[in-house]
Amino acid sequence: MKKITTILVLVCFMTIPIFHLQAQETNPDDVLGTWTTIDDETGRKKSVVKLFLKGDKLYGKVIQLFRLPDEDPNPVCDECDKDDPRYNQDVIGMEIIKDMKSDGNIWDDGTILDPENGKIYSCKIWLQDGDLQVRGYLGFSFIGRSQTWIK
Image (tube, rainbow, N blue to C red; front, side, top):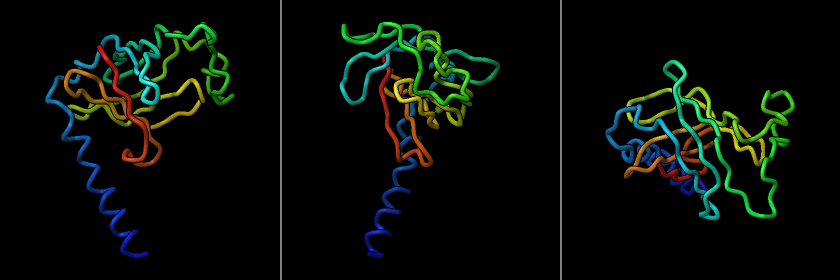
């Protein structure tokens, strides 16, 4: 059992630098603008998010949703925490990315909200091959989900 635990810990620590190796040498402002989000589970377009700066921090706001015919065209975040100001607010126009700080080629130390389940995750954002990689996670960045967003 000790061998398995040791191997798992080593694999986890070996994956941490991968995020930094994948980030392209770019200007931190290259992430600004509108991005189409792609669902990492279904592969379909979900929304358009506008990334912008407030001071030196990066924020992201939903400006369009791609909804299926049977889905509410103007959903609200009814799964958000009741203490969160976004609770029961329209998803369109909602800031889902907050307080991201530039760390060279990676934006980090901020949060991303998943309006479908109301959960807030730590977030990393970086450019890779012209697309935006967005990783939401709890605790350690190697335990989470990534999405590719297209300019």
